[in-house]
Amino acid sequence: MERISKHISYEEAIRSDTAKRLGISNEPNAKQLYRMKLVAERIFESAREYFEVPIYVSSFIRSEALNEALHGAVGSQHMRGEAIDMDCDVFGGITNKELFDYIYNELYFDQLILEDVSEDGTGGWVHCSYKKEGNRNEVLRMTKINGKSIYTNYENIS
Image (cartoon, rainbow, N blue to C red; front, side):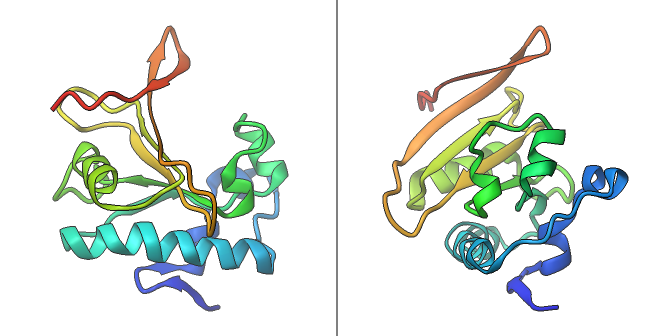
């Protein structure tokens, strides 16, 4: 099968333990695949080449059934192939906060979320979406409070 980008295989992009366990198809259609390639080139590959370290893709495309099983946001950009979740803790080399800061300061994006990352920059993951047109440059922080995900506008304190 074809690659999504230089550093993302098709299998990596559609991988989901939940989909596999529940027997849910997570194959993108042609439009979703096109969007995934845009996200991969504009966001993932830019960061991957800048840091020169592997970056783990924890979530990319999600079928509607998979998104529902994961209790994902209604209308999640993952379902359109426009969003990627990345986790630098898996391979090391950089922190999730460093990845977030690079995207925030250097790239054009639709939505960027620092998700459940601790004060030292580790843990959690970085969610980033990109659209061919109409990117909002929205920046949020997600924190867990009593097990519930709370999203707030991100304020760059550093």
